[in-house]
Image (cartoon, rainbow, N blue to C red; front, side, top):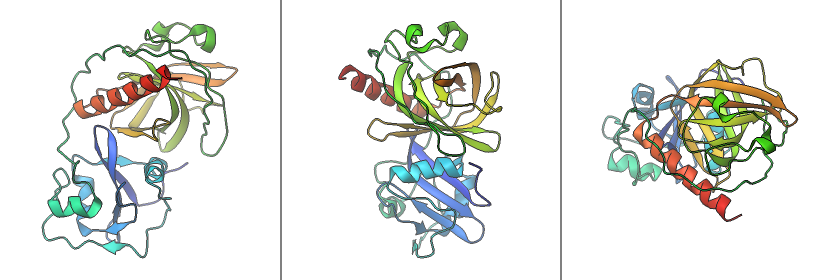
Amino acid sequence: MRDAGEVRYLVLAERGVPYLLARVRWPDVAQAISAASPDWIEDAGLFDLPYDASAVTVSFAQAASVAAGWGTQLHAEAAQDATSYIRRMPANWSNPSPSERRTWGIEAVGGRRSRARRPHRLQPLQTRPARSSTVTHVNGPSAATARPAANGHGRVDNVTSGLGKVADERRAGVRVRVVGRAHIRCEQTTVTAGLVDLSERGVQLVLPEAPPLVASGAILGRPFLLEAEIQAARICLDVVGRISWQQSNGTGTHFGVAFGELADDEAEGVQRLLAAAARKGAHR
């Protein structure tokens, strides 16, 4: 799916979890929604959002995933009947005012984002092998079944996946099986792949048929939008990635992506997602 037109889509996130989605195009489009306010609201202060360090620019496909998680279908055209928010002060999106928080129902979120640091180690999370199906697509619907499973010792079960040695992946950290999808940026194209497993250092993905852009050593643009099947969780990581390995088998093309350094709040968000996935796996 190619990114749409001149409209820019941006998210604000806390611990990697989006809490505000905006679309902006000077001088005629400045609208936003949130989980608590899924109907578009117009606000001229949103014209300042692209220049705020806390805002993350996302593609149309990534924005559509965020909106869908809040029960809103994203259309390329702006809403014509959006409610207007009349503000009485300049916008400060790194620290929204009480009025802004009330308008979008984000009273409990929206603090200033901490910047990157060297990732720290996760405590081991115990999971057991599990089988599930993952639907994936690239630029349109198609399907593949993802069979690899994580075994609770930070390794992929080679008997199940046939992907080779873990050392080939060149990433560290406790890995946990996470079923869902990842919306990633390959140059100007958004590719949607199936999630296989996740750690704080990277992610394993699967595609039924990988495009030429998905190759070992390729650099993926920021951000990563991960859409897990754990309480419909979505997490937006404002980092670049590098494809560290790639291998094809009967279930599709599997590849590992090493993340750049995560900010502290992003690392905390990933840890929470991993813990939830581990608990879900333990109760299967």
